[in-house]
Length: 211
Image (cartoon, rainbow, N blue to C red; front, side, top):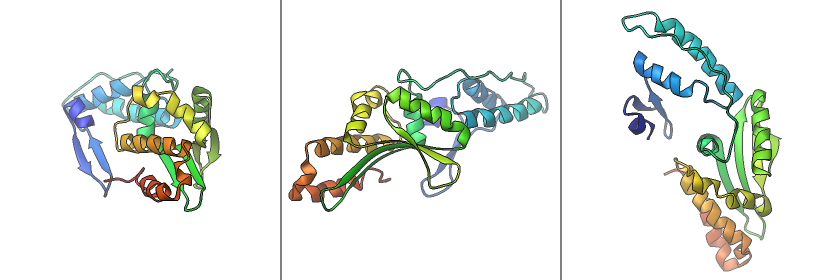
């Protein structure tokens, strides 16, 4: 999708479910730099981009093709429900999860995880943005998760209509649709019906299934 949108670059497969979009020509890299410069949000990504820009500028004035160095622009963006940033972040780092047990219990969660303590401030802002959720330590060191759990709390994600206004682009879109469908089933207490619960359990296991 990125390659089709930009009309340049190439895509290579790196693993069973992993692909990488690659741009190598100096002038096209310049375009990528201009797109990202000043428009990033995550502190760790901004730091990495700044280092990349420093290397780019050193190479910009060398070789057969010469281009002007680009000055780093300090980003001023904040997460907002009025743009697609959170949708893109969810495509990359998000997870919609429902576990329905064979008894009457269940859990429903929306999770966004990120490495590095420096990103904690941004994750914490999501609590204020969506008016719900909490930050928890991930089982991996220096990893943290923004978590919304329970029907009442997850209803705020759904009722915001954010993912309808800014649709997900990856397989997460199908995950969200099924997650929302099962949310309604749980809200209607369909899981308490033994005849329906078996089918709901099967569907819940398909939420993050990658074809």
